[in-house]
Length: 94
Image 1 (cartoon, rainbow, N blue to C red):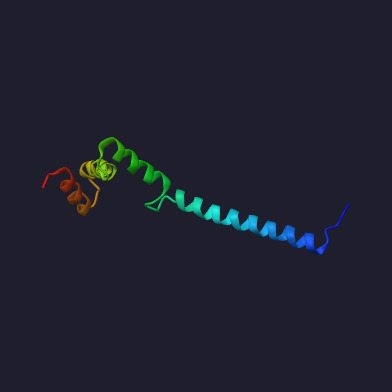
Image 2: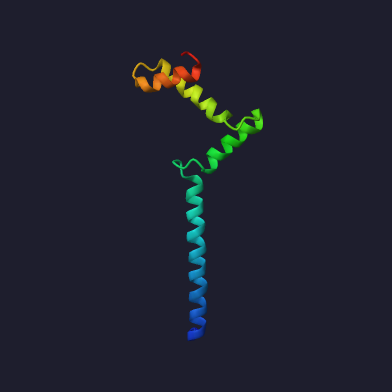
């Protein structure tokens, strides 16, 4: 069994530190890309891009969800009044 000399030890240590840094930075970027609370996450950007590609309107996905959830607020008897008011605006009922 061979033992590393000082120079070899510090080379291996440096490579390990560099590898740990690369993994840390990669995990940080990956976490941001899939963070559900971030508007720029991968899934949200994909949905926005798909809606824009189909309709040519960059706000198509947002409009779809406003109408979908607005409709649910209109039929929900427990929805707060401010949400029902917004839903009426979205649906053109005001």
